[in-house]
Length: 209
Ligand SMILES: Cc1cc2nc3c(=O)[nH]c(=O)nc-3n(C[C@H](O)[C@H](O)[C@H](O)COP(=O)(O)O)c2cc1C
Image (cartoon, rainbow, N blue to C red; front, side, top):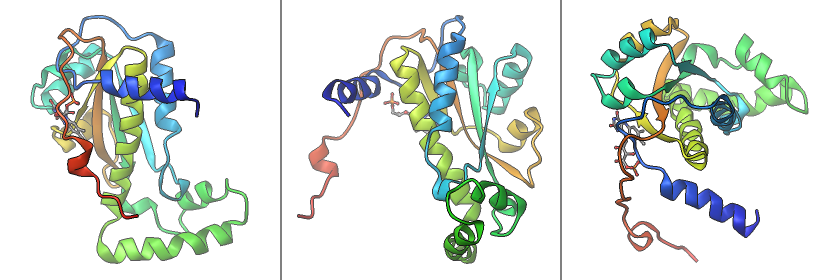
């Protein structure tokens, strides 16, 4: 990575802020495509990509989604909200169709892939952590999507304040198969940049040399 690329990346992170109110202005298709591409390129455990991105733009759905998010203004005013859903534990069985399809894409045999994967799967299953593991990965896509948006001068806000059943009904997902991980609103801000409040690195980092 060149120094200027690194600088651009950190600049996008520095200029991003959690936007609570957006202008009534559409996001260009190329920018939305770039945001979605950032989600698609994000890493997942074992490369399984157990997620889906639902793009909400229609005013009728936006209204319902706002209610499902406890009337948050960020959702009410955003021209685009992306809901990231994650597969539930039901799909991650090592010999099931989902893992078979995903595992078959990699170099090497499916047998080798499953042999590698199943030890971790049974460990997570024993701990009751599969749903949580699946859901957590969506946060990586979320972070990358927000940073790419900021590089296009588009602001965003991650939204964890929502009623999961209501959101699931809006996008008509089968909750035995899919869970709602989180939402992200996107748009051009109708409020000034909010300064970052962050602890200095010295309070957060321990080096073990
Ligand atoms: C996972 C996650 C969930 C969040 N959920 C909400 C939310 O439901 N409503 C909201 O107004 N802000 C939400 N936020 C925004 C945070 O409050 C905000 O990112 C944080 O205060 C830091 O501010 P900054 O993003 O402007 O740097 C969420 C942020 C994250 C990362």
